[in-house]
Image 1 (tube, rainbow, N blue to C red):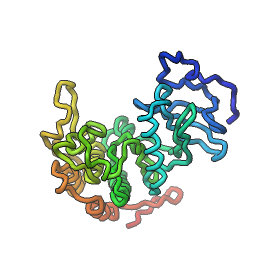
Image 2 (cartoon, helix red, strand yellow):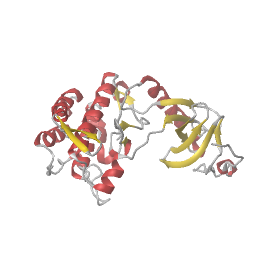
Image 3 (cartoon, helix red, strand yellow):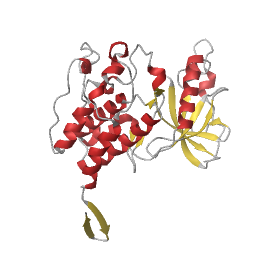
Image 4 (tube, rainbow, N blue to C red):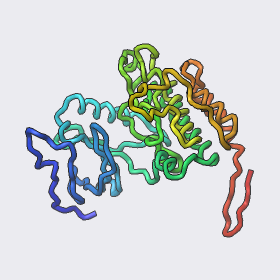
Length: 306
């Protein structure tokens, strides 16, 4: 990429009415040797940008605080917490961080750029995920959740839009991940409504929040991937915010093996003590993955290997 002198429109915002979007133009220098390519998306606190990093000589994802939050102590502390979390984690299914800038005009963290669609996109475009892809996906997610549990960390936001489908699949966005000890005093909901365990929805009465919440997140994700629908939809905004506090999901049907259906429903048990551990759940899927037919393609010939 050739750097340009493109203006950073976010810098031109009125100080009394700060911009909420950076509005970078292609080629703008975000930080020394780091250049904007395009906007990927964003949330309440951050924008996610595709960028070119000269030192890494690679495309990266830059997760940058929105302009109106660059001096917000709470937002800065949250970014610093995420960076510290990422620095302690090394797992094949978890996204990696390469650098961070925690002060100055554009606080951000630099993450690896992962090629592949989000699981949520695949479900929306093509419907339920086939068994040959579903079973390895579940096993990979459980390996990451098992690793996090060993570190006494809870991801808190396992869901289809936080999964990049590759080989292996990758679990992204640790922005709300927390140590188990830090969750002990939680009183308010934390996570994404449709994929939150009951103890995340109402930690004051259903807690404590532990790694069992991530097992629930895997179960909710596999339910969605298996059926093509969310386990706890809320089509009417006047409905109760957290239907999972009062009801179980509809039974799973379809071509998925009964063992998988049973496992998904076990992961979605409202009693966190009754859910399988990540290791127990992985044990079920390991046998099913091992039984999948494997195909080697040699020219025009397809060879089935067991």
